[in-house]
Image (cartoon, rainbow, N blue to C red; front, side):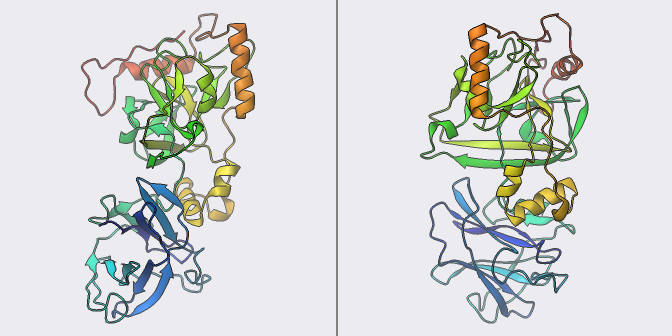
Length: 391
């Protein structure tokens, strides 16, 4: 169907519940609405879609939650607006019900409102605290342990190999609870994996993906092309990545790296599958052999989050909404201007050294090499070992 109910969370009070709707990109939402029906088939609430929170895979995403007028009950009812025996109807701008669903093994036959005469489709059950989400435009739904209302930035391109204790693993195969290798070789638990499909349309060049060619930072750094979003940060001044001159490790945005040979914006790319990883803390991880970052819960990110997004982060970090804290960056994060000045200094001085000049092998590089030597996790390859420079 062209428009559909993409996700909903029926558990908890109205501060935890939400209904997410996806409309084809550019569709005027003003005539669309969502109705909640009780078990007797009566239309008891209706809500407009409001303003889109994001555009994903050519769909505009709308979220009805506690920020929507009339949805919040102020905590008066611990079960919120959605009951286990309710139905949810999506109504288009002609007054036609385009989707009518229920859950928990129940069905509802509407007796009034736009869905009058229709019987809902039971889309299944999710464990307490999980949402029900559809990835096939409303055809089927499944339980989502970490609710996905709205969007959290996702910054690694699909196919990126992340170093794990079991070997390099395609990022799209990683799951919450898996572990990746950190800066000092320590295993770090994944709290959340986010996937989005972004269409670029008329985006400015500096908003497009950044491609880092093989060996741009030295041998096997990266060992295959690495694609990052323009704001995603990479380590410089450490781990053999523009290291030297007394510069300590720091994070720079990928778009600053386009000053270097072998790094460019992907001007012709029309869309991109993005993934990002939230760990217990902000950390350096290894992507195609390059030291880069996990998701940073910084003040700017939290300030831009909708209530539904904040709930998702709260669930992932097991912190209450009122105590949700920002991460401390694993290394200093430079601005775009500072990053460009740093890169210019390295270029002028000719200090594009890879690894440590003394020839010593750091623990993180040693463990990274062991991970890469095991071959990609969960995929087949004729050559399962990736050579990684550990200078």
